[in-house]
Image 1 (tube, helix red, strand yellow):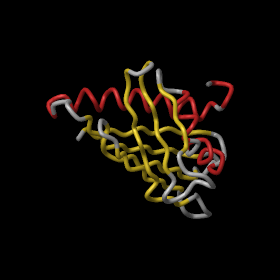
Image 2: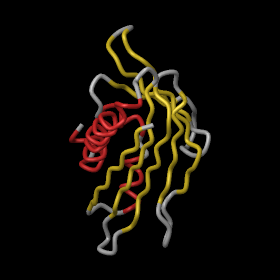
Image 3: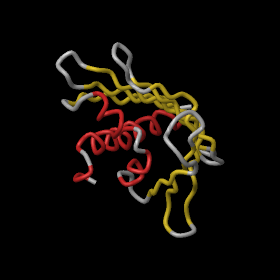
Image 4: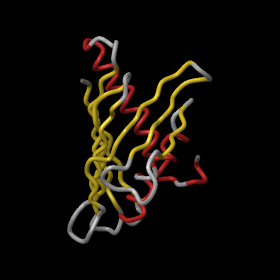
Length: 149
């Protein structure tokens, strides 16, 4: 499995950063050739499922995910969400954490462990580099807000 980490700071309040980073439909708008859709109704939390579809027409794959940990930020405690990737192509998990900064902003830490079926483990460093770039761009876009995507 390839492991990568993305860290960012924002001047936005921690609650707003959490809301933006857990808007999973918006994630797909920031990844080329990808669309996300929620599969479960109601508020987000443990058990929420969604799928990211990447491709063009019939050529593509689904990346189904499920929220297995959901702790919204609270005074003195960071927000923490863990997603399990349960697809036929993409496997692994992502942990998204949002910490309150002392200056009133927030710090984001996104750690993902990723495996793509059929990709040799020797290519894990390349996969980690691609993941860091793609998800760094996703986090940056989400922090900029709706007008950016």
